[in-house]
Length: 475
Ligand code: AHR
Image 1: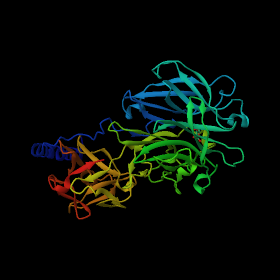
Image 2 (image 1 turned 90 degrees about the vertical axis):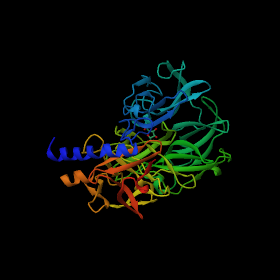
Image 3 (image 1 turned 90 degrees about the horizontal axis):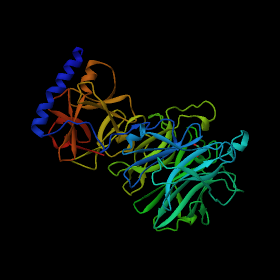
Image 4 (image 1 turned 135 degrees about the vertical axis):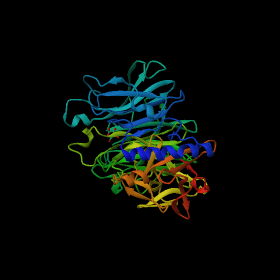
């Protein structure tokens, strides 16, 4: 251990007994209740569906780069899906209409049986491979991971045309299916439709609820596909994916009141702007084909895919690097989902709400650190292991991943790039203390023992470590 590390370690170690002794604080790493997921959660799995079943397990399926098989994972935690065993439920056939691409599977319990819906096309090359239709396979037993799967049949959609990305939800006791399909007479690749699901493959009368017409929906291809439903705060929020599957791929949103007639197209109001798009600051490109779940604490989670890079060689559809990603989903004051931006690679970030003034959060405006309530992405910080002993940590804003919180000798705190200097290595180190039973935490500065991150006015500053403004609530 070289001198600076030894001094840092001693400095870090020196403050621990005092802080622990006085406050009963226990220096622990952050936990959500489950282990903190790390993005990308699952590499090379696109179109991911993750849901928490009432057996307490998370199930995950999605498209594989080869598009030749239907796979399934199961884990007690979201993070555990990353390393969970992946079983193959069914492989495409040797010939015929399901011998080519297999796209975007979804696992659902339908009339007491596990059913996987997916899109499939014939093999043989040429344009015929895009003769994509929706099918289902069914499991012969109660455990989808070990049961035997066989073809149930083709979904009976209104036209014999390109259709894919079907999903099911139940609302007020009625079961609905939403899917994407090309409709004769409408010059788009796909539109969105909703119908009652009368039985596993039988639909009621279909209603067209979205056609891609806005500029951000028709970049490369005119696409509205991959619907996903979130029922919250008296409304139904239906996300869908639009444009070509390269960096222009993005999420749109349709909203309906929970008491509306969901089979009336007028009930579904389209947001004029996309709600989730590529972000160069966090280096996530082509965000789309999402699903929704909840974390181990019951908090809403957005599941989606995205690449780590913008430029793709060849056909984006044949690019394997659409990775499964997850992140917290927050809400605006009126209960509308706030998708923010894709948070980028690494452990999930957190927000830190001032315990003394819950209307204010730890935030930044460029390199200036403030306590306020700006746009969501300015309030999300990623914690990483520190350089002053096992319990030291560093904090970095997701929008400036190469910058870190650094305490100055005058007590000010700002964002600085990692200069690799001994001075930076000292002033960027904090220890996170979870306050037993107070649902609060403090970040004590290793470079200033007895001082912690707090606020003076709307500024973040080092304050005495027991100052009321030194307490934060992670969210
Ligand atoms: O990933 C294969 C297909 O590409 C999905 O079904 C669709 O959502 C996307 O366009």
